Amino acid sequence: MPKSYAAALLALILSALPAAAAPVAASGSAPKVLHAFLSTGETGLDPAVASDIASLSLLENLFDPLLRYDYLARPVKLQANTLSAMPTVEDKGLSYTFHLRQDVYFTPDPAFKGAHRQVTAQDYVYSLKRLYDPLLKSPWLFLLEGKIAGDEALKTAFSYDSSIPGLQAVDKFTLRIKLKAADPNFLFYLATPSTGVVAREVIEAYGAQAGNHPVGSGPFLMGRWKHSDQITLLANRDFRPTMFEGRRLPLLDQVDIKIVEEYQSRVLGFLNGEFDFLEQLPESMKDMVLTGDLKPTLKPALVKQGMVLSPFPVLQTYYMWMNMEDPLIGGYSKEKVALRRAIALGYNSGEDVALMKKGLALPAVTPLPPNVLGYDPRYRSPVAYDPALANALLDRYGYRKGADGFRTQPGGKPLTLVMHSESSTVGRLRDELWRKNLNAIGLNVVFKSDKKTEIIKASRLGSVMMFETNWVADFPDGENFYQLLYGPNSGRANYARFNLPAYNQRYEQSRGMGDTPQRTALYNEMAQLIHAYTPWVLLTHPISADLQQPWLRHYRRHPVELTNWRYLDVDAHNPR
Image (cartoon, rainbow, N blue to C red; front, side):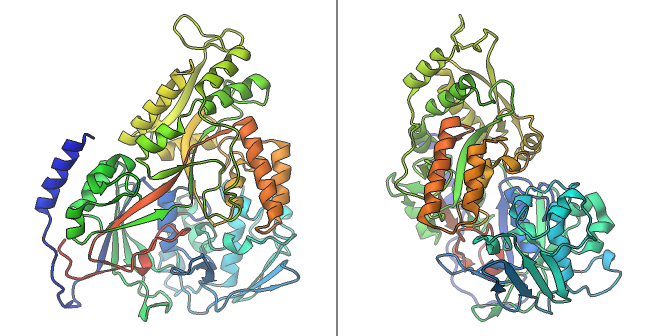
């Protein structure tokens, strides 16, 4: 967007905004409503199945895992959620005992036939077993698979009624989990939305439609729901007593959520007061809101309105993956590796950060963003932007240029790359960056635009050649990122379908380690293998410019959890 147009548009918006209101005593009669947005539509609200950020954001507020993160603690710290205390750990980290609170209840649903349904240890046994259900194809199975004692029985002959020694309800409110080997990250897994507790009778009542009938025990319950458009969450007034700064959660009465895919609509909506906060200001809209390049600050007119800027380093990695099973671009032969390596060498990270990200990002060197356990600031990538080397590599391995200036396959057949992309303004801008980079080394590329949810579905089936996406940490440890290229996770989180024995062996070895120099050395070796075989082109780690309205209270971004809605409050007489 031209700066002159952006400035004029901002002036028009500011002229329509109300003046900062003086504090007025709340009457207590008006409901407190948070106005938020999600950047993509939700796919479904089943904890065992959903993996997109929009769905996970909603799941965090509807369902209850055993543990969650302390909202204010930095560095991050786990705390009991539906437990009376943190679990007891015995047998050198192999045995965990969890004592549940006895005041946790599911929200009402016809499946309960009028009963006030209490959450029990057996509900957690059932919910965790669902990750193994072959019919669900859960993308979260990697969290537990091969780790819980006796879980091979669930892999060979799955049944919800079969008993395994590592997952037992000792009594109504006591859960015991035994591991095959100590796992320093195990408790992190039990704080993810995927391990949120569900009731068996609800799942059986709705079957394949369970994701359209979310029934949890969290601080909110589903109100109005127009799929991938508008969602209303209502405060669960039966939510167990949970205090924050002397007040019972949730503080809000309602959360109104819109799906807003276009970047400009998000920013204009925030500036118009339609949204109470904006996380991760789109880079392409930076000039409308911020001034300065090296250290962006909020524009004076917005400061005068009482708006607040909060820069936040996101535990997130953007990458472009390539399907290792695709007949054109996949495989482990030298000529296929050369093609993917050339694509990586042709990616101009400097232009991406400066022009596309507007300086609000760091170039990605490994899958790990800064502040994730296992990140090594000393590591240097052997792959850098070098179109001359990319061209030489393609020449050497037989990718010859034809009369049209585009390269052919080594055997002379046409070579056309197909990259999926999101059907949005930013998606189209990303397409042009990739087109420019790839054409510069003689590679022809066409783009297939669709909604991200549809692209993810196709990716799991192995029918996508290339796609640029991102991963946000489920827990703040390097394992959560390196598992994205672990062979057995192909078709789930491993969209690239990378399956290299040398990588798999190092990943398996690293899983049993804590954050040690030995594990960091293994991570660096895994990064070298990624660079050698290039299933990914590593792109950026974003720096989020977060904005909030003056009437919003208690806002603080958490490094791992996707939402903070249960802790937020709004002035009852805000000028919206």
